[in-house]
Length: 113
Image 1 (tube, helix red, strand yellow):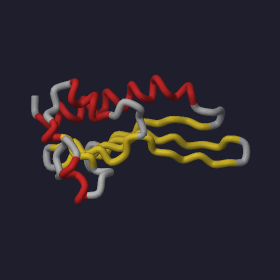
Image 2: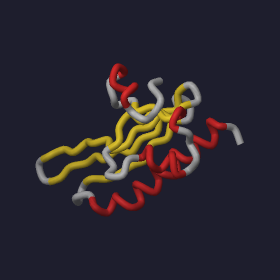
Image 3: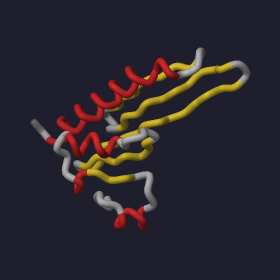
Image 4: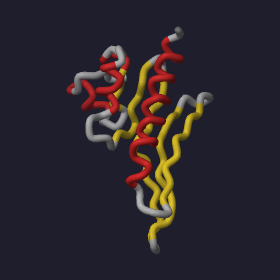
């Protein structure tokens, strides 16, 4: 299997599972959606809706595929999605913590770009 297809499958699988587990924890009126865009290789989970008089819009997870690497752009999970990727055989050098400033990535245990 092609590396991009493998990574795409891992990302989609995790996001679908996250939605399945956590969507019931949202307040009434707020929905969780998994969004997959294979053309731009952006994958995210979106929480949106109204609760009483407040509009909620939150992105707990956003992952991109860029240059054959997994870029984690947003990760609000407790255990971290990078842990999931490592457990499924993705090498550290193929994971970029995109939410970290570029000058700080060298101090993480993952790829800088």
